[in-house]
Image (cartoon, rainbow, N blue to C red; front, side, top):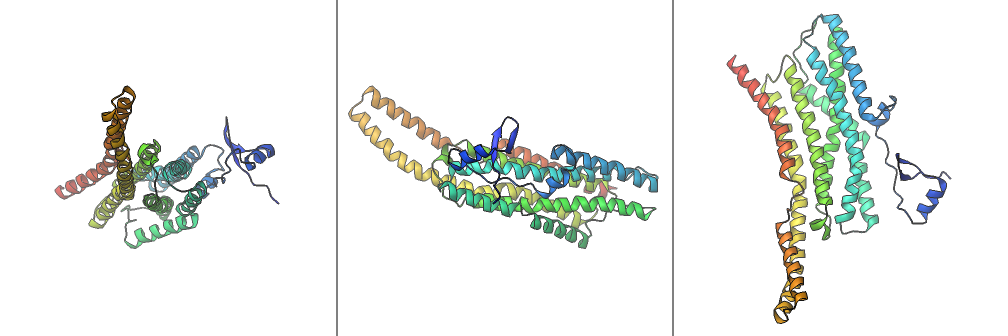
Length: 359
């Protein structure tokens, strides 16, 4: 029978443990958890012996250099270089963000353990089931193919370039094809992550949701996911502006604006369910707390000793802190970042449309 591998935390990070360590974990001294599998995007780039982010950056740089040389050879013009550069940036950025999100999801497990009112085994099973859905690579691939089909049928992949050679057309469209399928790869986990966060709000929560710092960690993590998605959105906008066609028709503008609304909805709506659960939990716990506070107040009034007054003061301070506690899992800082990243490209598009009309 094959012996399973487990993770151990060492100075160098995660690694395979020795047989002795595995036996200790099986005895119950340390928790045994499933090994985080590598995504196809990470396995693919592992042929370059560096970290995944450097690997994809190097691969994208090679693509940019080779395609630029190829197109310049056939066209003898630098007018296509900005578009190739933006596509190369997308080839690097999109898989890096997907892999990063996959690795960071482990933080969400700690958050769930802290605030969900279920047993550890029930939480782990729910978490692992959700992760298997969010990062289902067959569905991610299907999402990429579906995205390419949609943009092709709606002619959103038309860039307006006039090439002297068919080879130039083949080169730039191949790079666009790779960028597009990688975008589709990321769209699927983006939507599934939002659904997962929405489902978290439907789980029973304990009083830690009012006190735990993990609430801010979760909000910050989800905010980072949104900021990453918004960065890709902005980069696609700059790519479109680098082409000849730009945002020359209403369909292009509508499609791009739709994704802006999608990102805003992605950030707010799933977390609204958590907000509702926090409000509900806060109300329930405050009712229980208020009864205890009243008992302490009566005792302090009837017997105003130093100890009774001190206890009452502590209870009043806690009640005040609970009343002032934010019931949203994100703050103004995260909202400002996301709004700026989304709004700025839209302003650029509007200026392009207005200037185009004026010309």
